Image (tube, rainbow, N blue to C red; front, side, top):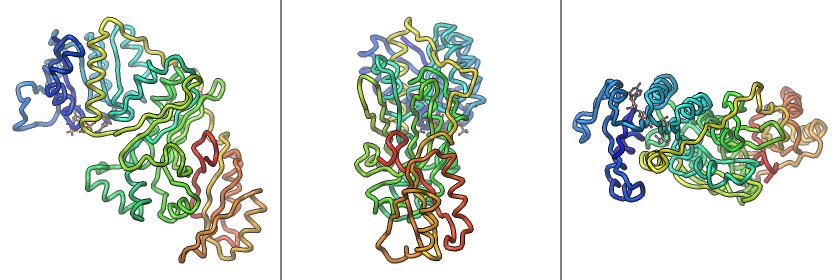
Length: 421
Ligand SMILES: NC(=O)c1ccc[n+]([C@@H]2O[C@H](COP(=O)([O-])OP(=O)(O)OC[C@H]3O[C@@H](n4cnc5c(N)ncnc54)[C@H](OP(=O)(O)O)[C@@H]3O)[C@@H](O)[C@H]2O)c1
């Protein structure tokens, strides 16, 4: 019999407790052992909940119970979660979590702590919710040199962008709908500003390249500046706008960024709609492999957490060593060095003069026209790929020029691997 304690009985934690109970028979068939939740710790009260006898508010009830071998941390955030995790390792417990914030911030240290004690720290649920991606990266694709990863890693923003594209809603309306229907949190900033996707690509990159990729070094932009007009132009160019997190190996360094991008409608990520997530991993042996599914939610995420518990039960004497080497320097290339093509939407007073000026500043641009009423003052163009540090000073030159009223939006063109595709 394996006893588990669950710290944090919210969406994911309650899903874990329910799944372990509901699928006990089939799980024990796979482990040869029975898994029980013995204690649940949460700061909230849950009157009427069927698991009353398991609840505690005192962490010592968990740490002093020698029969508990695995701690599930599903409270989220960094500070308290870090303390609970550290204490679990100190007292000889394996830890499973869905907490990407903690893994992205303290992954190397917690993995080392676990390895020193011969314990496991597993976090399949922290990226992609129910999509198996961490174990495939660590195990099934272990024979590959991973060249790059790109993905739609945040369901909330993908839901909002899908709604804007399919129903012509503006960002604020789509966000409000998402909040009212449980697809976005009351404080949505971590999602809409790209930080959630950033933590996830940092975790995936750390696994893929075997060295810690600090999310604080990854250039991150969200979707708050995307308008329905940009969606119209994207459609006219046979493209869609997606929030794409990407990273790739570049010699001893790593390229990584999170930003909205225009990708062609036949791109593998273009048809990933609503709350779904997808991750494309490029390996030297496998080529491209795509992982697709529900990136969040009670049972999809609980499915990943319980799978980690099962893994610990099955391999309890075979704990893996943490391998996120922490480099003594910033191993992420400065965004200014990335070569990118850009979509630029301007508002102009005189289209002929503006075109002439833009063509002088940016060589080889392609102008895009939208044959729809209401877009007469817009002038949109796609640049040739160039270093980002060379692009932005040129954009600044457009601002305040007589024929150009304003620069309305700038969006990267392409997924960061093949610019423009
Ligand atoms: N929800 C998803 O679909 C999903 C998917 C993938 C990953 N995740 C990650 O999984 C983690 C949990 O997410 P969730 O959505 O399940 O969160 P949640 O619904 O807010 O549940 C967290 C629970 O832990 C409690 N808690 C907070 N601090 C505590 C503390 N110091 N001691 C004891 N209990 C504490 C919370 O109480 P209060 O509400 O009073 O704070 C709440 O009951 C987060 O890291 C999240 O990013 C979530």
